Image (cartoon, rainbow, N blue to C red; front, side, top):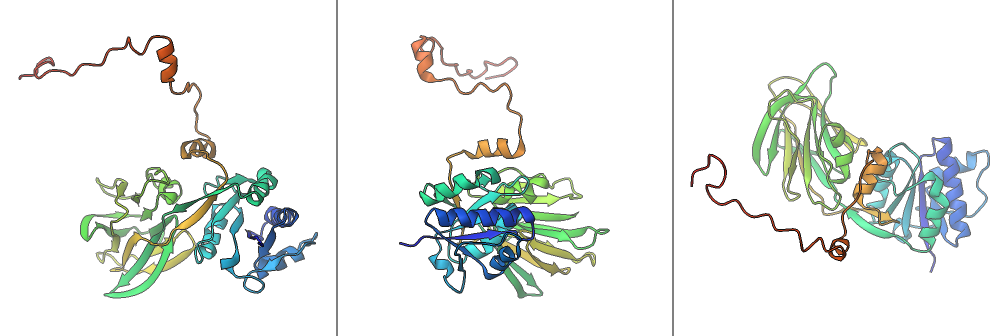
Length: 330
């Protein structure tokens, strides 16, 4: 059975073009069929070294549904662009980081050859990442609908003026304030824009949505973690004539006049990410953000304690009886 791998890269960068050319050659050498878009194939052909092995063209020689995997060469921005394509047919994405942090990527540029070997051997698993549906209303009319993998960010349109907003959870108003914006994020997006806005890091397997205000002028403007089944909304108040703008994954935008309303719900269609290692999310955090862990000794093995005869000698901590604390009356 023919196995096809779609290769997507940021072909505006020299290092990405080189990586794409190498990936296609290695895939072909491993018995897989590299697939490219017509535009990216032309970009590689214009490159000084060209491309000297067969590739199929997406939409001409093969359809997306016939592709086993999408290999994305670039940073998180490139992976987010690739997700727009792969999500149409639920094709898994595997990112090779050519950017900076590259939190969505599974491997690094130096591991490209090894990554191709793992793909050829089918040594990867697939996990689903929650996405959100985003709807914009104005004057009682639905004016836009889109989706996001990371976040929907309601921001001020003018640098010199804050926007006045009111946030809502499940049809009930929560609080209003002036701010630079509000980020409504998925667990995947908790390490992106929401993280920069002071939001919490949410493990990918935790099903939740995050609300993170940006530079809010209010006493209560803390990041919130809410149910994935909730309906979130942000309304641009008409107390001023300040306009906002909605950005989804930094890719798709729509202007928000006073009175506009942005609604967020969990989407029934996730994005599928391929994983080639069993590295826990905590280890990815440490590696990507270069967190200090010096002095860590690790958990104590229960078996080692039992062998030393220490486990049985440790008494249970007793409960404090009523009135047992100093000054406490029973």
